[in-house]
Image (cartoon, rainbow over all chains, first blue to last red; front, side, top):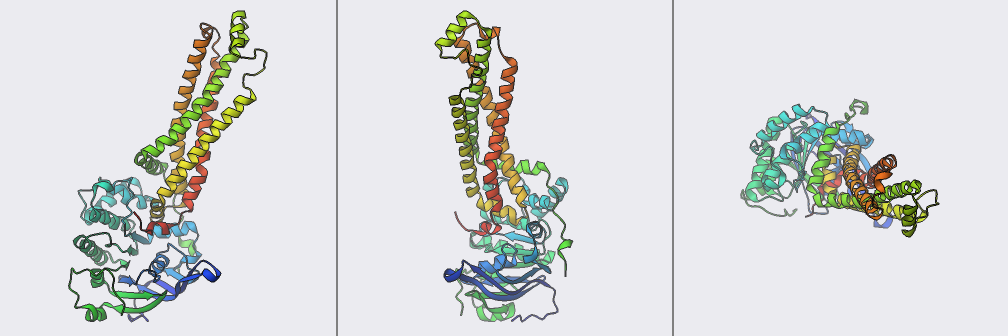
Length: 257
Length: 219
């Protein structure tokens, strides 16, 4: 299924992952046996219509939810065997989350939002402040350090979220429709920021998306339907297929051929 | 393959940051906090009023002044009783405290529901269950403490004013400072405990929320 050669470093390995909700007659199979490798430093987009199991898969590989059957390894750690403490540690240190609705903690300033996960990781207050300010400058919010979320625009909030995801130098950035609540230009800025961070910091970015512009920067695209991987495409193939779609033109839902 | 033992335990968080998050949450939801505080204030004002009034009445009875005894009996005080806290009084106080507890539980549970996404986000950022529980406990203890202090001050002042008004001149002759101090302490501890006990369930409910909740889209 994977077209990329096996020489590369695997950062997430999902083996025959199944996730069922409910029991007996009413049981739904949100994921029905997904096997997938995610390589270090790649930009993977997960595409699929709503109800396809896209978010379920996303949650599985993000260590937010545990599979009913099958195994997920994140950086060679079996997620299913972790207890609550270890899962918290993993979310704190290995994974950075970016949400569709930003989820900036409304009660804290931009800087505090970023230093919080650092404090969870055990960094000293002063160290965290310095590092947090530096990351905020890196995402272009050097002059908004002490602003509260309601004083920031949507794009700025999402930048804070990106900075927060970077707080503990994670291995993986998980972005759930990061541009869905933003206008086209701001969304483009966020995508560009993600691409840049991925390049400069050697991150692995996984995003669930509908946004065509996000496909442009993806290394691979995974299409999921009815809880199964329909196909995986590398960027090259995709360029040929959807190369005709003009930049800046946003298609809300990408029909699966 | 990395084994699980390679994962270091998360260090215990400084209480400073827990306080900070709790206070920020309270500032943000000022009205909700005020409702909780006023709940404690009213219940504790009632409790301390009853306790202090009983102390004062007891002291007045022990003064055994003829004129005062007539006054006391006119007010319906049983001057031969061993204690001025009858079963009805105790029942009333219990009811007041119970109402206050239920009020706090309700308001805290509501705030947990409101904050589901925030809690989910915290967990995605690496917060342990203990952190969530601690922020809630700190929040409610602070509210309990403020409410208890205000309530006790209010209750005492009213109790003293009422008895000074009803038995003019006698109060200064026999003010039971020791007993009143004990009553105040009892009330304060009661208020604080109620606030903490009432928040255990909401805090537990909050800690049980799963990080998936952070991804839920609403508005």
